[in-house]
Image (cartoon, rainbow, N blue to C red; front, side, top):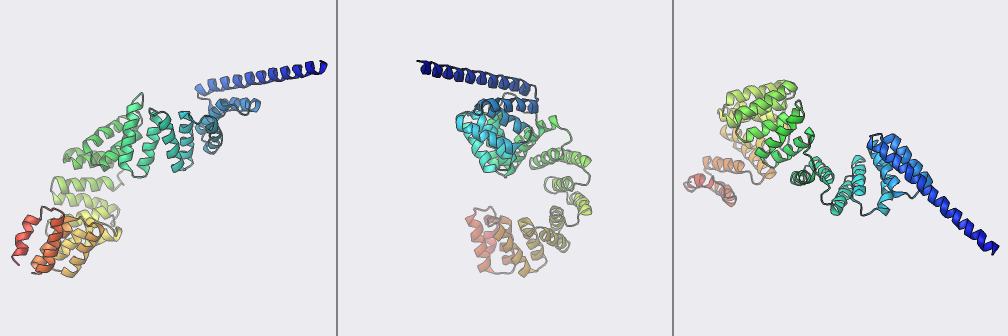
Length: 379
């Protein structure tokens, strides 16, 4: 009987000790949460550490410590903590969100995507996960995916974003997807939150150019110039407005020259100069600029097309053919390159070659076929 009584007392003492330890751990967690709510992450983490000293398997303390580690930019430490939490709380969305964030900040992109995806699978309304997935897609030039995630983020977030960078990124991908009106809407929201972000003005100028809103585009590009007079991009932008929208080649070239004064090898300005000179029938002058554009970018399809055209108009047929074929190699659907080949072979009275490239245009359902077919048939 005595032995039994001693064992009972021992068990009772053990249970009481465990209960007291649990109480201590809970008190530390409670204090940690209070500090966390006050944005005192370092002090909060110390309380969570104390809880874990008392009760090493306290999952909530471990999760909260991982959160604090992320907040304090100790993302490697956060991964260690949160991986342990994941074992116990595998169906808790916020665990996967914090893990995704830690993976993202340690440049483990595939793991970040997987964790954010798991977060959404558990809680489809977790707006922050969509935002991070959208940013990852944006960084990887996956424009359609980025826009889809951004729209989901806006659907579920409680309050519209006040982050200028969010609206800039959304506008950027919409421009890339040729949704220019929508891009302007997003980019103007970006301006509401930051008035001096150069790239927002550049994207607004690009959208307005594509919408044929010449004066607006010039205004946005001029705002960009005020922010950074040494950036060549807005000079090129205004050059493009005058070239493609206003059809004023002299004004266009004056803006491209501003870029070339900063960098004589800048590819777009050299291409723009060549294009304008071709439009003015100054083909020999155009060749110099177009060669320089290709020297700066060996895969510049449009420059090969324009150079081919310049060479064709100056009767350098062999080199013209070589450049036009290079453009088609880079982009088999480039109609202008095909068009110039046909017209060049018509001029040379080479019916076989002209017919070959006319057939290629026909396969593309090109509008040029109606114009060129009578000329080829007449050879």
